[in-house]
Image (cartoon, rainbow, N blue to C red):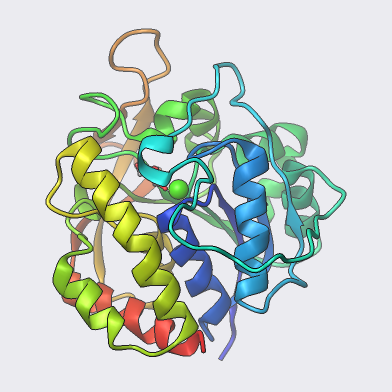
Length: 306
Ligand code: BDR
Ligand code: CA
């Protein structure tokens, strides 16, 4: 089977951690590089978390580069209310060696895309690094097969009435990506907020006796408590792995072609993903999810992380 070449740009982050786990353990994917964004926590913290996770998954040889410490034009927003002071509260990693690529995140994206064929770039945090890569080297567009993102919503937001966190943090970067001409696939809150880490999900994961399942159960307990306190949700939504699951199992999500625009105004609508049907489209937007099958994919990959 030919593996799909991918780069993961992420801000771990409890849900990002399991997007990365899927990238590391799926036989359908070839993880070429990991870059970090500032979002759930500061760039220092998300980068340290990504390094810990790569070591934990025995993939410390995959190039990891620190991304931009702030959005293109706005002040950085972080989310300790959900992800804690470390950005990954709930699990204590052993003391691993800190191993980073000397390039900046956007440069690692550029070089990796140039040195490989048909690369899919997945973003599970603010889109700053990918936007910088597209600004510095527009020619890489031809080598990017697809941009797959967790972000936005066809309905309401989570940080404001209109906006989802990843897009709100850096709307200008999202706008650059959505107007780049590269095919996009968007997994937004309208589907990811249906994927809840219920007590039943945690109970099932607890029965899987692997290191991956232990990581999941410990992190999700903290994530769930915080989601309940902060958003008043019944359980935490496991947003970011949706990107990867859409690549490894075509049966989980249904997509509709839409024209998606980003609101970059300085109004209360900033960060909104305006999704229009029946217009020339730029994005495949997820509109439906098979929740049971989503969890089967998660559990299967937790089993592989022995
Ligand atoms: C997104 O924001 C972050 O807090 C999560 O990791 C996810 O990428 C959900 O709005
Ligand atoms: Ca994220």
